[in-house]
Image 1 (cartoon, rainbow, N blue to C red):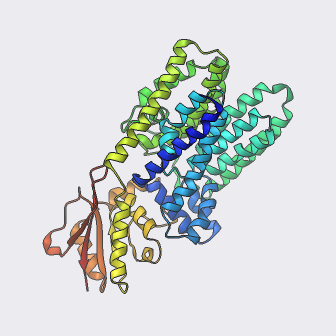
Image 2: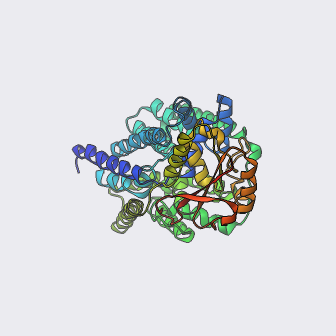
Image 3: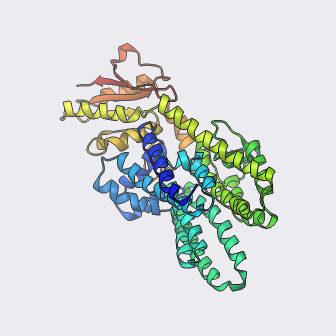
Length: 466
């Protein structure tokens, strides 16, 4: 592959990203990010709510004006904003791997970059762009630019810090005879970390930091390390830890120790912090570390210091990641589309037919409730009542507790609430795996979205309380 191949590789990735957008089952994280920005009337509220998401404020500061000026443009505006970062990230990766374009191509079509960043990636695309912009600036000996990009990473996403440590440590070690500019740059990076820490402290009372269920935590961390290569809906903790061991053996001892400057705090954070993530979403946790490991091994490969066996292991992992990415894209294209958006459009049609009525909407699941609320926007948003969202108390940490207590509300209780809402259309959105309402309660089934990838299509029921 030559330099002229890069625009064609980028074009192919872009076409796949566009295809993925039309068959994308909207994630709660995307709608949640939109609501965090849209529901904030001041910068302070935005900073407070974004701190509850355990992320930096940078992504939300960029999203905030979009939600204020175009409140009903979800998910299109969010996709454009997020995908712009992913597009730039892919271009930067291809620039960094310009002398190993085959490795770069496998990387950008792998699961993390090819699927996670190709779907509505929220802040991860921008994070990878900052990370590889820093790497490229180091290669071009532009230290000021490099540390500027690295200093943006903590302000965007804290998991990016684990990837910044090994790169900064490796570059500082290589130039240890002239440490002064690197120490100045590192101090700027540390200042950025402190700002990110202060931002997180705004909601410190909502986060749990405990050591518990250590074997289960090791399984979660191991799965996070494996997911960018071998995507699975199940825990693959032992496999991930084995991959980590083999991955470290691919590097010389010095490079392994430098890589551990990011790996050790990654283990520390995720073993001590409560997290209920499972399945493919875990790829985002270790995604940046995954990219740095590929960069380190590719450097050894270019210098001719990688044995045949290690080279085979390296390319086998990259190939497996590409297969995982293409498989999940095929599954999405064949079996799925977002049924939450059609449900929202159906509710909007009912409102247009009878504009004097603001429907009262009961949604018993936060995942699709947030997507529907984000899609409808104002003025319909003011008429939606769905249980889980009560800012600023809402945090990911207490999600599980709320879902256990607020899901599966009996139909009789919903009917009672509907009767209290005089002169209203009472709409209920639920999955098909919930028992349908008894006929005596007066609910009429009016809409059934197409089957989704989870085979739990959404249904819409209406009860006219006038």
